Amino acid sequence: MSVFALGLAGSPASAHTQAQAAQSTVRINEVESSGGSGDWVELVNTGPAAVDVSKWVVKDNDDDHSYKIAKNTSLAAGAFLALDVESSFGLGDKDSARLYDATGALVDSYSWTDHADTTYGRCPDGTGAFTTTTAATEGAANACGTSGGGGGTPVQGPWPGGSAVTVADASNLFGENLSGLSFESPGVLWAVDNGPSKLYRLVPNGTTWKRDSASGWSSGKSLHYKGGSGEPDTEGVVVTPDGMFAVSERDNDNDDKSVPEILRFDVTSSASSLNATGSWNLTSDLPAVDANSGPEGISWVPDSLLTAHGFRDEHTGAAYDPASYPGHGTGLYFVGLEANGTIYAYALDLSGTGYTRVATISSGFPAVMDLEFEPATGLLWAACDDTCQGRTSTLEIDTQGRFTPVAVHDRPSGMSNYNNEGFAIAPQSTCANGRKPVVWSDDANDGGHALRAGTLNCTP
Image 1 (cartoon, rainbow, N blue to C red):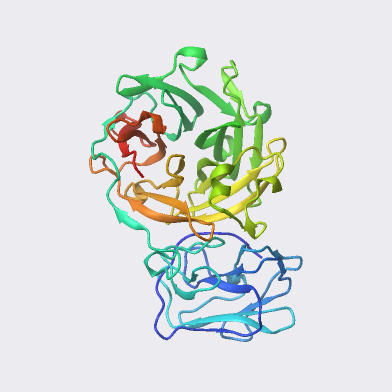
Image 2 (tube, rainbow, N blue to C red):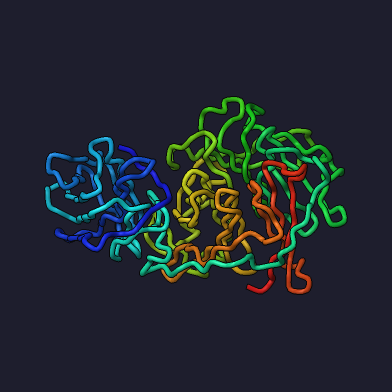
């Protein structure tokens, strides 16, 4: 059995039908019949308690085609489960997905008369009618978009700030592969390079940024795994009250194998290179992806914001309670996956290597390259690269306690469609004349420059 999450979908024909039989909180939530990732059927548990779905069966419109869920499979309250039915049968353009419990009773079904451009999914999740989604979100909340009927429609429009964008570094200061960015303060910007793996501490240099020449940071510092081994392909970075955290998609010393991992580094060290002081390997929790399509962005959201807005914990099926995760610090870590545009929220055991996934979120994009939390607005920003024409989406916690895309922004008109993999918003204290600085990092170093600066409106 393959259990994983993804992102992309399409629109239902008028002849589509759905039916429910046996009463159950487990529902068919999304169906992919012609996607590049194979055919799959996603389930969701809409109830308040976990459900044992061991030996439940999924069939298409042929009773001889059967996919049995493995034993010891439990679906937590509010959780999603994607089933790779293609290992047993394929879903056609005129077909059905039928779910039976372990006794053979029909639980739920959905039929269609043509393939969706993306997927067919319930909007809102678990309770709404099936519609064509705006993106496939295998193992995650559905991307309902304009077809929603539930989560609202993200507003699409121009960049919410100044149109002008300027070069923000010296010529060829970094070269290629500069990726994630994170502001520590108005005068300190951190940047991470994915190959060679390096962390840079940047300080203002007039209207641009330069490497900090103090405390041994003039050339940046090489990054390694615990004990000094390997070279993590660090793609994202974030400064939090608990320290400096980076996210890596593989070890550059073995770059054909995916190794999605969150790493913590002590940036107060005077050493010329930094070994990770903490690590959380996400391989068993994330979908299997190509070695170069793993985690790209990382951000942190404080518990105070999450609890104030009734953030839903998909692990418990109830409102998020920080006390449920002792030793996790004072917030959750949000990781964006390039392969599917999905965001995963984790409570990390900061004294060990354990973690718990608390939420699975659709960014609205096919890929996520960086994440940025904006404290002044409570918005979580997801940035896409030239694949999405440099757009960003903003997500906020809705009335159901889930982060949901509320707006999609074009890149500033003064910036070309660069391969931007990093995005950072300066603190609210930098606001002047109604705007504050933002910085993008260009992985391709177009025109010999990896950093560009613009402005964002200070008013939400």
